[in-house]
Image 1 (tube, rainbow, N blue to C red):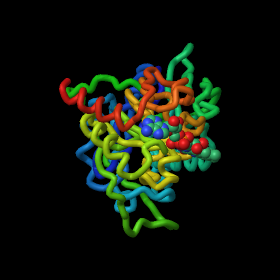
Image 2 (cartoon, rainbow, N blue to C red; image 1 turned 135 degrees about the horizontal axis):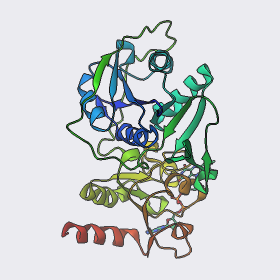
Image 3 (cartoon, protein in one colour; image 1 turned 90 degrees about the vertical axis):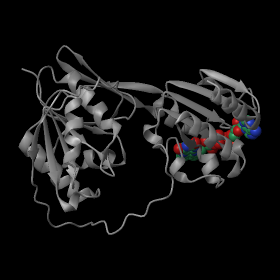
Length: 321
Ligand code: FAD
């Protein structure tokens, strides 16, 4: 008979985040022939429905309201509760993003649903869904299943393999008006930092700098390599604390968690709190002057050397590929 899966798709500036397609790919794995629906919140968002269909959504609920233009906990919680009452899914999936991390526990607590946060894998075992999630800052993995009832799960970006998009697939588009009232928070203005470039949490390649980068200017060769490879620049907390870069670049236990295909750590010692944010990267390259640096214990490739020599050499070499 299958199960009904609802994906709460996330947009940024009207563009769907990649993790929404990953959630739909996971939904295809666990639906077992059941229905897959997606819901998008915002205003002027109807253009995204066809993309959600390509990744497997049978129905796309367009939840348009001026209070949903920007994320606020109470407006999104109210809208989610109403869409869940309509769709009645067995499983609700969304990205483990800043929004997902805030929204999922709120709604789960309000409705008394189970919550699995930061899932890196979903699999079926005898008809039950087994969710894998990292614990102890990524040192171990826990497998969880829901014994009874509905479940909310947030999906760590860049972990679930994407299904191939099928441009011929179409979904039923359903306008779903919601009633949002008694708001305690409203967004008056969004002030953005001029970070630009590739989104760090979804980047396929991350070039990260630590205290070994030594100054703001020291990040320039890392940025050049990232630009060449279409990647993003990240940092250790050591580099952020030393004011070499903005805290929005911090990776680790108290920063962002990234899972790129390639992570190049430059002048980063590899403290456990940093590893918590990057150790699940698919390929890790460490560049460090100190052969004893702990980062080498998690690296697939290690280069013992001065990053100011190695990084420009790497960039130069890659320019010719
Ligand atoms: P360092 O440890 O000083 O390492 C610098 C490295 O650069 C050294 O290994 C050195 O050999 C190398 N180096 C120097 N010059 C060069 C050169 N020219 N070429 C090549 N290599 C060179 N840290 C995080 O990163 N993220 C977090 O989220 C985080 N959260 C934390 C939470 C808590 C509660 C606590 C207590 C700490 C947290 N930390 C976090 C801090 C963490 O413990 C480390 O202090 C920090 O990661 C160190 O940053 P670093 O590796 O850049 O600096």
